[in-house]
Image (cartoon, rainbow, N blue to C red; front, side, top):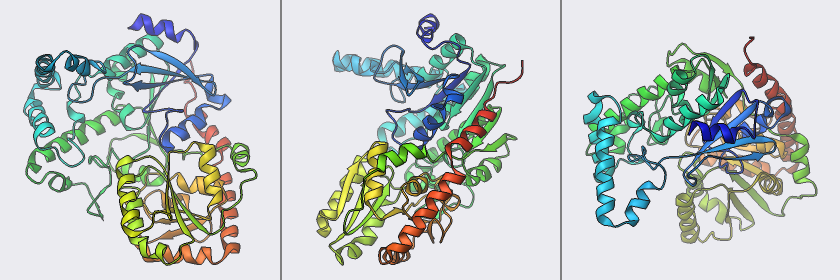
Amino acid sequence: MQDSLKAILAVAPHRDLLVLSDRYPPDAIGGAEISLHLCLSQAALKHRALVTVFSDKIEAPEIYWQDGVPVLKLPDGDPWPVHAGAAGQHRAWAKRGRFSQRAYEVFAGTRFLATGGPISQAPDRATALWLEFNARPRGGVAKDFSLGADWVRRRMIRALCQAMAPKTVLLDNYRSILLAPDIRKTLPGADLIGVVRDNRFTCARHDQAQSINGKACAKCTLACAEDDSKRFSEFHHRHLELSRSMRQTALAAVDRAIVTSAFLEKGITALGLGLRIERIPNPGGRLEEVADFMRGIAEWPGEHLLMIGMLNENKGQLQFLENAANWLKSNPNRQIHLAGRGDRIAEQIRALAAREGLEQQIRLHGYLNRRALFQLTRRCQIVLAPTVWPEPFGRVPLEAGLARRPIIAFARGGLCETIRSGQTGFLIPPGDYPAMLAQADALLADPALCHRIGEAAHAHVAQRYGLDTIIEALTKTLAPAPA
């Protein structure tokens, strides 16, 4: 594997910065990947960086270029708990017949119990395996603690580090940071930098919501275990505890941490890991490019409000629509637009629209590329962010500002930093849907106010989250150490 990696890396020579990410454009599904690419595609970094992602769609390493940035795709493993096997191996055995499938599963399961971590945790792996197939907790089994040394990603990243020998490794977000101890052993002299973009180092729960039934957790006691798995909460609690410890141990293996918000900085500092922490927010985007996207695009007539982001419980789209149904019915000219992936919540939204007779007023656009997203934002009057969780950063206010649109959001997490309430948008007490709808009414009734807030938002994003400013800070942080 190491020789084959050296051969493929020859097409992108002299790279001293390895960037490991969950996803990367054009396969991005969230703001994290977009923010990362905006930075790496600039001249100061794109000639140094090699981005690496894992894919379960390939059997051998392959490379592609995105706006001048080389992206190496490495083969991923099968899903947990057979993650020590190459992707598709389980399906291949299943095609040979039921007996072959069962034989492979018994072999893989035995291997998992024996090699998925310390022998002292074998009972924990056994109960995790049992929960997966018999009484799965809501959101799934907490499994990080049991990934083991034979996890395909660990084997692949060790081979890549040996083949490339980078001086600096940027681990972008949680799944990449899990590999920090392996990289540290393989490259003891490298500078390891972890980028923390979400809540998964402070919240072990699958949805990282930092709340239980809408009530914020002041301190993590893993009380969510009983909420997720009422019959076997003691097992689930143990798995959450082990996984949280494993995540924090992995984070402690980096030399430095970059956080994107003061909210995240407070949470990571409270862990007491002794990390050097630097705050570098996500960039807004290229002003000229965004202006080009929207050139000639006019508002739609009527009242159009937009929600941007993956469709899930944390983002709160379904909860908002449930509370706004009567408000929508009171004015047939009102339309809510949703831009983002999420089949499960999308189906529930369609069912709600049908039940309430709002099929013509709730429009699901799915995932949109950046041009289409900014054009849709420009056609709407207001952007909404009714988030239920504490947003780690909050990229949506930046996108609204670049489109010169006001945003109304619940005052949670990083949104309190990216929005200046009353100036670039409005922050509403969390969960106060009547107040959010009343603020929308006030803006819709006053186009001049809408315009004024939108212009202020654009100026704020350009000044505080300008790409050049963020690139300068990131380039300084990633500068090679003196020889």
